[in-house]
Structure formats: structure tokens, C-alpha cells
Amino acid sequence: MYMYSILNLLLLMILIFIVYQGVIRSCKHQIAIDVELQKDVLPKGAITYRDYVPLWKELLNVNKFKNRSK
Image 1 (spheres, helix red, strand yellow):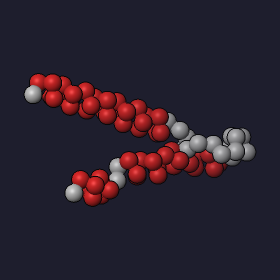
Image 2: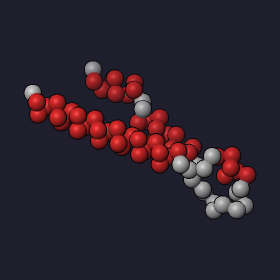
Image 3: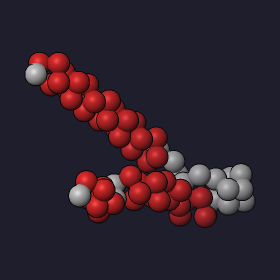
């Protein structure tokens, strides 16, 4: 039982780290309106936080996981 709780704690720590780093990395990009206003200065196809919205929607899709657990 002790080993099971250590593995759960380790998994939780890894997930927290991954989510924390993912949020930081996806939110550090420019705001979409800034890219639009500076499109002549920035390279074409500059990355914004909006590029990560589909990723986060899919990762946080609770309904999908609820259906799988049934």
C-alpha cells in the first residue's frame, strides 16, 4: 500500500510539472492583436497563444475521459 501511494504522488508531481510548464510555454507567446499590428515587422506565421487553444481544449476535454471510464 505504501508503494502505491508513492507512485500516485510521483505521477501527480509529473503531471503538475507538465501542465505547469505547458501553461507557461503556451502563454509566453505574443498576444494575437500584437502580432496583427506588427505583421510587417514580425516573421510570417508568428506563434501566438491562440495556436495552443486547440491543444488545451483537447487536453482538458473532460467529457471525452468520462466516456472512456464507463
